[in-house]
View 1: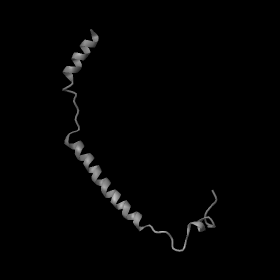
View 2: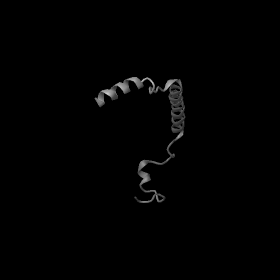
View 3: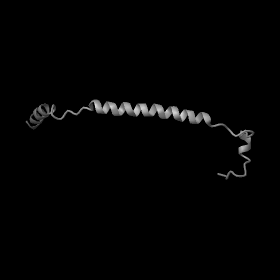
Length: 70
């Protein structure tokens, strides 16, 4: 009996409690996506600017006196 009453109440009140994100939610998510695209483009541009130091090879990094031992 109690379960049946709860089912009837839930069925009648569901239209009142329906929550939908709507246009504002879509605009927020779309805005975050656009900002993310520009952030990734900027990050890739900055990574392309990074170049290794001239005259330095991977073997010389182990003999670097400024480097502290782990």
